[in-house]
Amino acid sequence: MKTSEAFELVLTEEFMEEEICLDSLFLHQGWNLISAPYDCDWQDERIEVIWQYNQGWSSPEQLLRGRGYWIKASETFYLILQKR
Image (tube, rainbow, N blue to C red; front, side, top):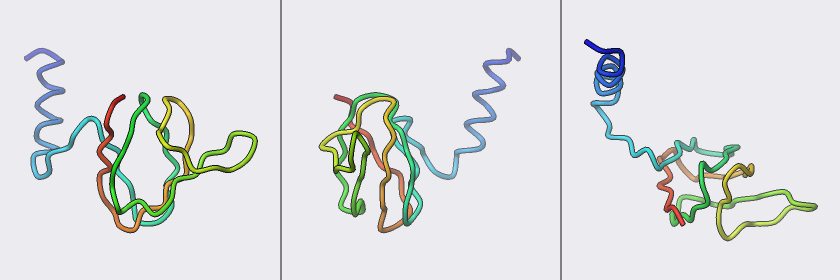
């Protein structure tokens, strides 16, 4: 068995109970500090507020790759990211 095959097998067994989208972020209920892997949009009513800091606090219209964001979630869930 090759190393990559063993790695895939471990990942498959570990996540078999719940399918996980690679384009998602796991958010806990309450405040989460996140960064996006690429420029993206989101649509989810479970997000109460998103804040970014850029010479002052503001609520962004999209998430930009590599920047930090505070997200307040009303419950624990996977936020699906929509690549731009």
